[in-house]
Structure formats: C-alpha cells, structure tokens
Image (cartoon, one colour):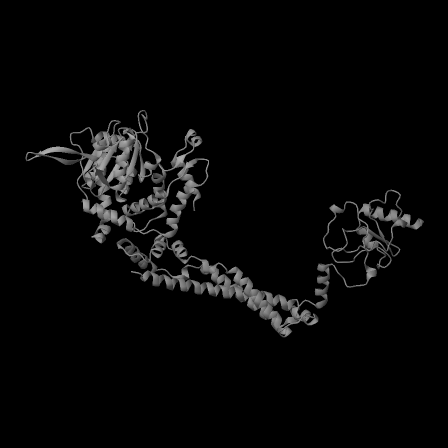
Length: 292
Length: 315
C-alpha cells in the first residue's frame, strides 16, 4: 500500500540531486567571477605589499578567498533548498495529484479502505512523475551556459593575466580617488577652515575637509578662494583671504580648474570654457588683484 | 463490506439524489447538506419560509434511506414527555403494570417542526436526547435507534410567541441549512408534478445498515494536514477581534467543518478532503455559531458574508 512512498522517495532524491548540481554550478560561477576580479585587480601584488600575516602562501590566497566567498554566496542563494516542499512541486506540475499526494503522504501511517484506495491512486500517477520535470529545463541549461562562460572567462584571464590586469598605478589612483587621499606633499592641499555660506546645499561627495567645490581662481600663480565666508561682510578684501589657510585637496573628485601661468596656454583654453558670469568674476578679481 | 460500500458509494449517492429529485424539485444544496448531516451522525437546523417542502424533503430522504421517520410539531404547550414518551398503566392478566410508551423521538429521522415554538423545557429535553442519543424516563434509560438524526426547523418570520434556541443549544446542530424559494423553472416543474393524479414517490436506495456503514466510511476519509489547519484557522478567525463578530465559534465548529467536509468528499466520490470541501462547509457550520455585533446586524450583514470575508483572508 505504501509503495507510493518508495516512488516519492526516488523522485525526492532525484530532485535534490539536481538542486545540488545547480548549487555546484552557482558555486563555480561565483568562484570564477571573484577569481577573475582578484586577478584583474592584482590582489596577489597588493597582498605581497601589505604587512598582513597570512597562514598560506600569497599566491594561494586569491583562489582560496574566491572559493570561500563563492561558498558563502552559493549557500545563501540556496539556503531555502532543503525547505522546498517536493510534494507541492509535484502537485503543481501534475494536476491529477493536486491535494491527493499531500493527503496520502500526511496519512501514510493510516490504513483503511479509503486511505488505501487513495494511496493506490497516488502510486499509479507517481509512476509517470519524473524528477527532471520538477525543475525548469531552461533554467538548468541557462545556468550551465552561464557557468561555461564564466569558466572560459576566468581561464582566459588566468592564462594571460598581464593582458587583463589593471596596472598597479591605475588601481592606486582609483583607490586614492575613492578614499580621497593622494599621498602627495602638503603644499598641494588647501585646508578649508572657514565655513562657507549655504553649506547645507553643498555636496559632500568625496569626504575629507572639503564642504563643496570651492571657486578658486589662480592668478599669476597664486590661488585665490572666491567663496564669500560668513561674517566677512561687505568690507571684505581679497588681501584678507589667506592662501595658507584655505588649502584645496587636489583629487579626481574635485578637479581644480587651475587658470594660471603653469598651464601651457596660460589658462586661455580653460578660461574660454567658463560661463560668462564666471569669466566676469575672475576678471573683476584680477583687476582688484592688480591694484594691490 | 466497507470496501464494497466505498466502491459503490459514488453510485449510491447519485442514485439517492436522483431518487429524491423525483419528489423534490431543486434544493440540491439543502438536500446534500441534510445528507451530510446524516452521514456525520449529527443533526441539522433548517431555516426557511413556510411551504418550501422541508417536511417533504426529509420524509423523502427517510424513505430513500429506509429509515423510520417521525414528525413533531412543536407548540408552546408541548411537554417533554410528549417527545420522549411516558409510562402508561395497562392491565395485563388482571394486574396493573407500568409500560413505557416511546414518544416520537424514537425514530431514525425526527423532524422537529418549528422547534423555537416549543418551551425551553421541552427544547432542552429534545436537545439532550439529540446529544446523548438516549432517553431517560424515571430511572430507566432507553437508547435511541441508530442512525438517529434530528432535523429541526425554524421559521424566520412570525417570531412572536417563540423561544429562540440559546447559543449553547444551537451549537449542538452540525449545520444550519437555508432553504430558499425555488427558481421560476423549478416552481413551474413543482406545479406540473403536483397538479396531476400521480403523486411522485421514491423507492428505497440503501438499507439502514448501509447508512451506518457510510457513516463509518465518512470518518475514514483522509484529510491533509494543511487543509485541516485551514479549517481550524477559519474557526479561529471567528474568535479574533472584529467589528462584525460579537462571539466566535467553538471548537465544535472545527470538528464540524472537517467532518462535514469529509462527508461532502465522500458524497462526491472523492477519497480525500479538498480545500473546496472545507470552504463549502464553513458556511452552514458557522452560520448559527457566529454571533454578529448589533451594528453589523443593523447594517443587514449576514454570517455568510462574514464567513466569506474570513475565507478570503485565511491562507
């Protein structure tokens, strides 16, 4: 009477076998992605440079790290796999088993004329059920294709890493851009000690001590902060603005539009890109500056 | 026997309904629910306007099931002994002795017509017999014949001089069945059938022992755990704080829904209970068990509407 349980057990093991295969495909795909990223970003080089204590040789760290990340992500992606109700999946796929299968399963220990007839009926239909039908074939094929693509990608990258790796300098530049540090001399920076007006409306992207994009004019090699600071009033004169106080951090996020003699065309091309209002402002200050 | 009865059950019910259909036009749902109450070895309360063939329906069912049928017309002066029976003195060989004369409750199917017109004392005696399935007169207990089914009727109009059944006693009825007026086509058919010389009649479809066998089979119908849980959740939902419900249903309602769903499944030739059975039986089981708030009643809401809302929300 309970031979439907044997059939169900076979279907379940077949289904979970396929789920394990999908888990493996995901694991390989994720590993490939992370390993490729580690190669491209020269993680091995930076680990060599760092002073971290590593229990394994540095060359093994990227693949091991990629594998650990892949396992964690794959486990997270498949964390609900074991909770999948196969009976419901079968019922959804085979409408003739709807409500019958779960009833027969829940009453598997019962024996009477009606339950036995139900078990027999379920058993007959389960003969036609295949675990391969419970998972979408398209999904499996797609996952296999994706995995193959990722494996090919990581193989290509690992066989000729020099061709694909990003130069260390570029990575350093990107890192400094992201972190907002340069590592250069202090004479390149301008500290903002005053609080600009309308500070709340000024963006804070890039962090650091800069509240926003300062209006800087470089005239005859000298940087002049054009921002009007609160409390300075209308009697403020350009000479009151100290160059040393208002330093500017040169970074990719806040490029300094330097206009001065250190630019090849004397800053003419940069000046031409300015708006009329900006041009007028710079001109006025230049005139004022010439009077000092 | 069980196996054979089960295999033939689908055919039996079809034949039974066809046979009853020879006398009763329409009212399929009411007939099915009466059959369900019989299969569950329980009782039912019917509410309908006068003249909708309540008596004819139940007497037709009793004929088709080969069961003894009695009708009690409840009135305010009806005494408990008028129902249960009483001791009478008779002369046997010159000696006078007491003999128990069974009342109309000693039948397989009893129609308690307009039960709300009987006094509470008489109602109580009847409902006790329904529950215990036995009658105690004096110091002697008399078991009632099996199967025992009471179909009590209530008239929704003419409520003056009535004693509405208390909630605790209403709970003893498995189902509250509503009988509505027939459709135009059905009424036309009724007129055709009952204005001729040949009055339609029914033949016996199953024996009393088969009815008892079907009652046993009903309880054997399996139900899935999630469907069972749904039935319990539905009853639970009636007890949740709601603007429409004053008092919810008791655990008897959970038992009632599941049992009635099993009977419905068996009648429809299924060897398992479907969620559809639970939903269908929730209405007649909860109809007399859920007490609506005054505000809801004032707005004209019915327990069926509230049940419908609950069914939509319970997953």
